[in-house]
Length: 211
Image 1 (cartoon, helix red, strand yellow):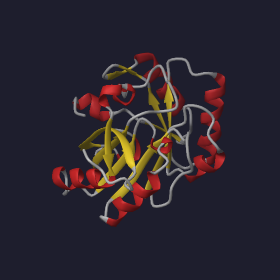
Image 2 (spheres, helix red, strand yellow):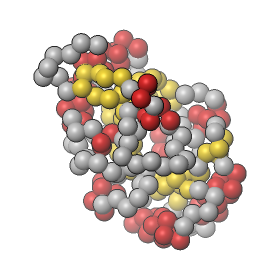
Image 3 (cartoon, rainbow, N blue to C red):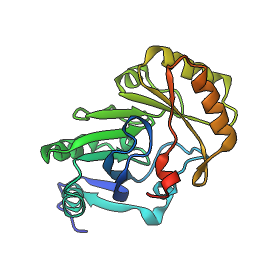
Image 4 (cartoon, helix red, strand yellow):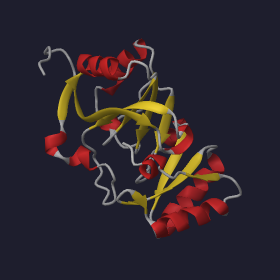
């Protein structure tokens, strides 16, 4: 695609519509704008496209708006995800442009990268390492990814935020397209012992075998 020299260019690996399968908005139709690249290298990451050099597509704001308008003009909600959106310096410009089209904007981030831009309607922080307190408190929901045997440090972090944030979810790591059985058992035990302060995120889109 050709771009004007003044247009910021965004590394994108996917742009599609589906339902949200995780957390608070499970079941809600959304346009998923997935950024390419992430400063982290989680061994269990279930989004391999953002690491694949062949999957990187360079798109301007105009390209992104045009594709959304052409493919899914009837869906009012856009989720910025990744990869890692906060690794994209020009993200505030894209958010401003999307808001001008009337979209309801959500973002999921590990919390690693630049500051959280203004203009978001919903923010999910899914911490993979220590995240600044102000970013955690800014989030509308927190989502911890839980393995079969979470460390004492992670369990302490989960317990801390369960007591200090109103919307905390635990999501088991996956084995391909299904949750890891032991991770699911561990997450469920933590949820059941939390006196209602934790909730279980089950990635329903994987059960339905949709994107």
